[in-house]
Image 1: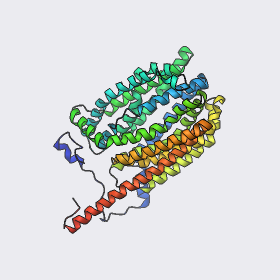
Image 2: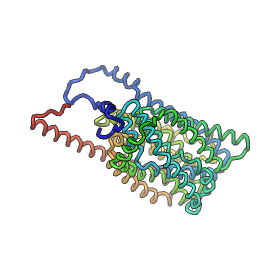
Image 3: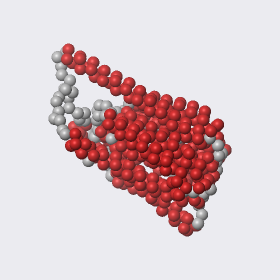
Image 4: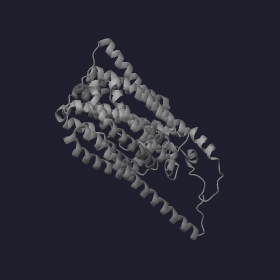
Length: 464
């Protein structure tokens, strides 16, 4: 990789990335059973299982936290709280600026202390980003209630000074992927939910009261503490900040900003469904939709975990193995159907009968999560290979389809329309990822074939 290790010439030897044996060289065959056993016990499998297991634990804790909230907040209050959280997560997407995906990739193709130095440089770069995010949320809080049919401005205003962790969640996952320590991000997710449950319990025991504002502040505190512990766990090194920062900026300009634009267009518009519901419906509908979304999101965690854990391997692989896609499809679909069948009794027992209207929204949202999981395999692969243009174009497709479906379906159908709009938009997004993946890597293969042909005609060798 050119210019991806500015820390010194002695580290250049660590840059060599083994992409596999030369084409055409025979490899020893291994028994199918042995290969399957190796896959099951590989580091990637352990990281994926850990990510999914942590996601499951986090969702169990999230269920407890949501139960505490729904039993102590009216549907309208819970809707305002959910809207505020969605707004924080939506605005957070804009505060990555294409700097941290390159950090993950640079770390992935380096080894040892160089990885820790990349993490240190990324953390230094994030400091002003976090401060800017807090200031932006504080300013937005003065206009939110006037723009939407919610009561969230007070909650956002009091939470703004400690809101810096919201954009950092994505940064943390990217850095953990790059250094092949995904368990750090996974553990931080569980810890954040555990702290939220503990803080909510203390709040209710001490005061016996809960509001949207206090709930949002407690959530922000829990997330901030969890992220701080994760930063210490990553063991960043800060003795080569300047050269790595320059490299991050260079790669962000080269391709990272295109990935950022694609993510903002795709994920940003996908997360606008709650905001659009706040614009066209009422806080109660927002609350029902938020609860159904939380249930459905849990079904996508195993596949998202698999894709995240495969990031380092994807950075060194020439294409996506078929078994990754088959696994993502089968697991995602099975979990989606299970969630739809269990939604109504789960809501009745764990939350409150007041929230039963959310059950009918789970099926389309769970299917949307399954489709999103398959698309994440393509998305992670393209990101691992720095295909910013392909990701940007896929983001444009999702943004366009998501806005179109939401505008068409939310005003007449409310929360139901938003749920089905999410599914339709993500199906289009998956198709776009498949098309751009095939187009991108077909061109790469053709270019490589042309170079090989030139070398053969010139009497050279393609083997270095």
